[in-house]
Image (cartoon, rainbow, N blue to C red):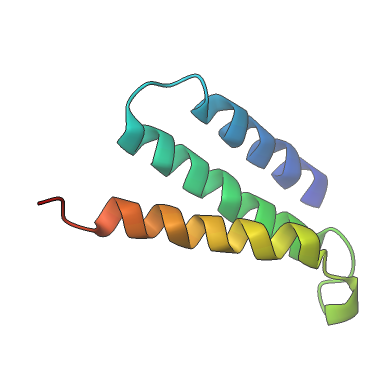
Length: 76
């Protein structure tokens, strides 16, 4: 099941590059990043922290928060 979430994440990330509207790109990218975080946790034994794919989880979690920030901040 985790592999399908990884494929879904890849579709979101690549799909975001096909769009022109920045707000939509940020939403799509945010969902892709969240899927990659889930993928990084659940690909192996999610109960064992040492099995988590931290090189996948950390940058995608940071990017998801960056997207959330840009989607919620008010433009002057």
